[in-house]
Length: 98
Image (cartoon, rainbow, N blue to C red; front, side):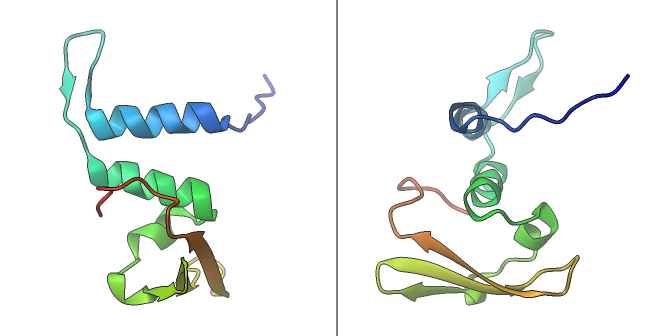
């Protein structure tokens, strides 16, 4: 069977991030606790287009405030390419933490 990958909509991604940030109960009763670190990693992945391996390597020292934006100067782990990712200051909700 030929499976096709379908991109998530913005609403689907927001729902996933919200669900992880708030925690949930599985159909079998298993409780999954809230996890802001994973939710923040997914938000970065979605908004900046970085691979998860690059997100996990991020440190506060690579995040630079540049006027009304934040800039990340990184070297991608897989391709070894230098990359600058930009984000608006108000792109992430208040209280989002790593």
